[in-house]
Figure 1 (cartoon, rainbow, N blue to C red):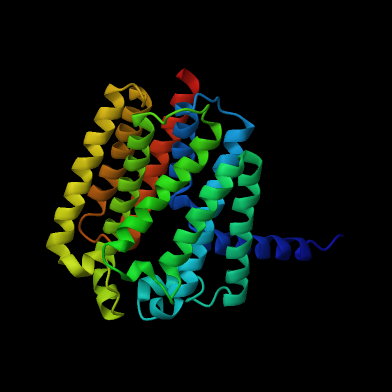
Figure 2 (cartoon, rainbow, N blue to C red):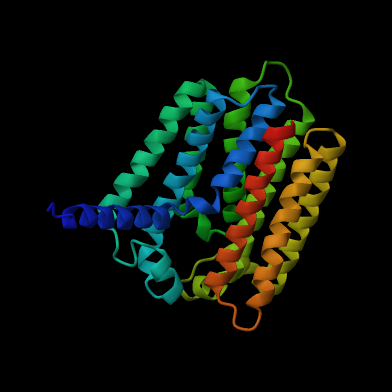
Amino acid sequence: MTDSRPFWALIEILTKAVAILMQLTRCYNYATLVFIGTAVAFRLAGRGWGTKMLLSVFANLFAVIAGYIFNDLEDASEDLINPYKSQRNVIAAGKLAESYGYTLSALAAGGSLAFATFVGSQAVIYALAALLALFLYSWRKVRLKSHAGADIMVHGGTAGLLFLAAFLPNHSGGPVNADVVLVALSLSIGWALSLVHHQLLDIDHDRAVTLCTTTVLLGKRGSLYLAYGLVVMLVILILILIAMGSLPVVPLLTFVSVSAAVLVPLLWFTRKDRTRAQIEWSQRLAFNAGGIVAIVVWLSFY
């Protein structure tokens, strides 16, 4: 009888490796948004969804992955003092050596540039700009994430750069329409809003490690006002884009309704003893469910 133990041992090793990679990249936080942003770029450029769009998606996705890994590497020593962050950060938790982390970050950056090469020279330029922004955001010798105001602008601006990396190589030439600028601005505001949200969750930790983030500078009340302002700006921009015919209404409403239908019950049932992990898990599930259903609707009817 054949001994199956080596096979199952290999499966266990591979499962753990995949789990560590998922925790290291946390691509479930942003993969759907990257796909949607790239798809909108191709729609505005008048291009269909095909191989070139997938190459753009992977170029942008690997750029963000490189940034996430590098950020965790640079934050590892500080995350050790926070019980939640020390377990979320696989470097701080001791699940992956720093040398492997830097290697994986470099490979992801190289993958981004490789995919961008097949899209066009402009895609490579914007991918390089995005990678540089993400590097300077986290690198301890510069660490723009510790400079109030700069953290919001760099984090949000990276989304705009990645959108342009997908749009410009496919643009037929001539002046760029206003709707392209408004979409890039909307994505930047959305990413900036997500950063404010996470900074509010981390504000006590950031104060403890003397990070001068925007929320630390403004305080909780001031940061909430900033978040409300960003939400208002985002809604106004989306309404303008809908009126211009640049965003399809049905997929957008599908995203909002499905996300709300998933998120509200989850937050309601955990309202008495809700942990940060439950909040983030609920948000991820709701956002990805809404995004995936919206993409299916978009592909089916547009």
